[in-house]
Structure formats: C-alpha cells, structure tokens
Image 1 (tube, one colour):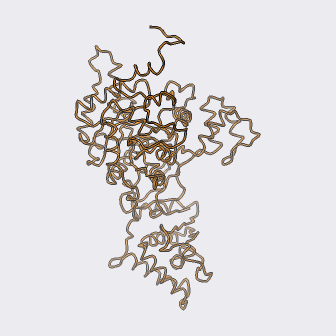
Image 2 (spheres, rainbow, N blue to C red):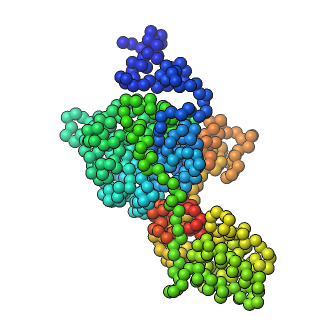
Image 3 (cartoon, rainbow, N blue to C red):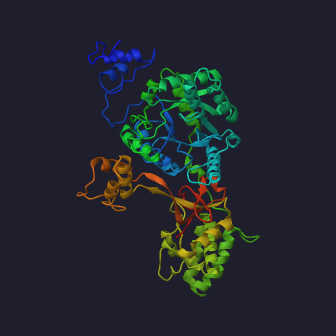
Length: 587
C-alpha cells in the first residue's frame, strides 16, 4: 500500500476504519463529518456555548500559577469551563496552592464546582530524575494536610523551586482525605509503562508498571488511588490509555480521565509552547522536540469527552463522581487570628476596654464627653464583630516600636477610629476633626478593618523578627508577592523565546518602560509583539513583600504552604496574600 495525493477512499471512511471498533468517531474539524458522528449535534459557531450534553469534570489542570508551565490564569480557565458546561474543575499547579484564592473567587456564582489539589514533584533518591504525584483534596481537612506537606517539602528543600518530599511521609499524611491519580508521563506508573515499552526484551531490569501501581495502592489505599487516562489527541495516547485501563481492571482500581489541561482553549497553544521554552531556557526552535506539537492540552466539553472515552465504559462517569466527592467551598478555610495573650482573668475585649480606658483620657483629655461616647460606641462594634484580638495585636506591635524607639505610624482609614487614636496606633484625633468611623469599620460592611503601619525602613526587620518571636513561626509568615509580566519583561522574554540575538532583545525591551507598552512608532517585529502581548499580566515568579505578614490561629502551613525566604535570616514566606482577617501590613 502506498500513499497518494489522490486517494480513492474518502477521508471520512478512512477515519472510521482507523477508529477503535465500536467507538464514536470524533472529527478533527467541524463540518459534514461532525454531523455524521452525531446527527443530533447542532451547528455551533466558534466561541458560543455548547448545548447541554453529558456531564464532565476536569481533574488535572495547570494554570499560569504553575509558573511557565500553564498558559491561562484561573479566571480564564473558569470562564472557559463555564462556557463548555464543565461541572467541576480541579486546579493542580506544581508544588503549590498559589492560585487557589483567585480560582475560588472566579468560580463563585458560575456553577463550576471547585476541586483543589497539586502535582507534587518527588525527586528520586538516585540520579536527577523526578516523579510526579497528582493529589486532590477530598475535603477541607485534605486541603490542610496537602498544604502542610507542601510547606514542609519547600522548607526541607531550602532552595527556590526545589521541594523535597518523602514518599513514606506522604503516605502517612493523607489519612483518607486525598484522592491520588497516577498522573502525567512523569507519574511512576505511566513512566514505568513507557520505560517497559522502550526496554530491551532480554533485559532483566525491565520496569514493572503493575508493581508501581500496587505500590501506590498500598501506600494510599485502594479506594484513594485512581488510574488517570490522559487524552490530548497525541499519537501515543490510545496505546498508553489501553494499557493503563487494563492495569486498573486487573488490580480492581478505578480509572478516571483528564486532558491534563495547560491552557483554557486552543488559542493559547502557541503561548504554552513559548512558556515551555522559557521554562527550559531554550528558544522555541530549540525546544521543538520537547514541547507540544499542537495546542491540544486544553479544556473540553462533556460531549467531546464522552465521544473520546466511548471505548472505556464508566470512566467518564467515574471522573465526574470523583470530582463531586472532592468539591468544596474554599470559604470554609477562612483562617482566624491567633489568640492574644491577655492577663489572667481577662478576655480579649475586656483587656482592650481596659487599655482604651487607660489611654483615652491621656489622648483626648479627661473631660471629653464626645470622645467617651465615641469610644464606647466603637468598642461595642468591635465586640459585636469579635475583632478585639486584631486591635490588641496591632497595639502590641506599635507598643514594641515605641519601647524600641522605632518610628511607627498607623495610616489610612484607621485614622477614623477613636480606639486606634486612644491606643496610640494613629496620630489624628478623629473626634476633633469629625471623621466618620464607619469608613473604617461597620457592622453593615463585609470584612475586617485594614490597619496599615508605616515603620522606618532601616529598622523594619526588627519588627518582623519581633512578630516571629511573639507568635511563633508556625503561626506567622511574610506575604509573597506574585511577580507578573510587565511590558518590558514580556518583550524581553518573548524575543528570547523566539530566538532573537541578545542585542536585539535589549533593543526591543528599551522601547517600552516598566508599565507602558511600546508606542506605535516602536520598531519591534510582529511575532515578538504578539507573544509579548499574551505574556503580559501572567504570573512569572514569586517575590517577597517588604512588610506584609500573615498571622493565624491554626498552624499557618495548614492554610497555605510556606517556603524559605532568601535573606540573611532565612525567614519563612507564605506563598499568597490571604484574606485580611489574618493579615497585617508593616510598610
């Protein structure tokens, strides 16, 4: 049989013959073939919402918070999932939970259920190889356990992006609150399959995929391990998924499916290639052998996945069932401030009232009736909102600065509070200037107040260290900033990925400043401008906030993983900005 440019067999017939026996044929592009595959499917213009179809959930998704390994931010992923009527979406970024807050906020009210997880990078004991383990939290307790093990691994690694996990410790940590998937090509089971297929048949050290799957099942429990069939329309997907499905059936484990999505839609395929090249410090041409040849690692609808998984009965349904079992509202994880150490026999609000009674006359004057009434009203509001501990913590920091002769001043809307003035946090008399307290705090407003403290730059580190000593490193951490692509950096990285010489890279980037895009008269090639425009605004890496700190009642690693901050004192840094109910800013 030879190949000819004038085949006698129509493409639709050839496609039908090449499809699995009894399987539905999914056309490569819309047209008459699509109607033949599903006569009931209506014609739909690009970008429009699909009609209601089979239920589907995506359990393996990398956002841009996988840092150069995901091409869409959480908001774009949720929007596309809602358009495709995907029932649930799991965010599974590498070794972190960086995007979970934005993911949860974006999904609220869309009808897309949220599942939280991470793809853990386990470094092998021998050599430089790595293994990926995909973990989904079944519930808030599972999230706390996952966050804690990621934080412990980041701290154990001691270097940026080099977490050190212990497989036995992971097996001990799950407590039945995780669902573990075999994962991508770097998962131990798919990797063993690939190695076995490439091994010399005469070799005595051929990897055993079944043994690797049994190891996972024994470590995490048979009910918690799921064999993941990844379908990205690649040539090797069918053979690998057939082998994985057979393994699951032989061991009596549940098989689920995913697209291992790295971007929301096919439109981000080129961007995903560019990010992969930047991640490996290559050009797009140099990385061609390692990057995806087509933009197929994107979200898909239930109708499309039902057709793709038709030869694996029950897998789509099992995928949706697992997503439903793991979905929960992120708001249930809202942390609390640590308890303030009040004197014996006092409550937090009682101690706050005593401090205000002591400081009020000195600040407002002993016979200031309006001030006394305002203080009483504010204290009642603070008690109703259970925020006495928050004011005591800020007062404690200000009092430390005063004792150590460190310049410190509260600012912002806190200046509207008579309580803050009485405690010495702010320096403006709000009663005298008739400032509105409700601009700062009110029972009618949602959320806690925001008290920012300006502290002299050269001694700010002393205050940070005091907070660590006072509340302990298990309950305090500095906030990490997410550094996003700005115009100049986006141009520079786009030109690097496209293979332009360094001199031209510098010339292109000089035509834009930090925040503003290049002007209309800029001499920059169209391909650089196009890729840079897609990079702009995406997360690139983490930095450290100069003074933002997070305090929590529970161990902070159970709320969000921490990592080592690279500085002489090797402090901890939390990896995202958390709700202000547990945050204080020392600027």
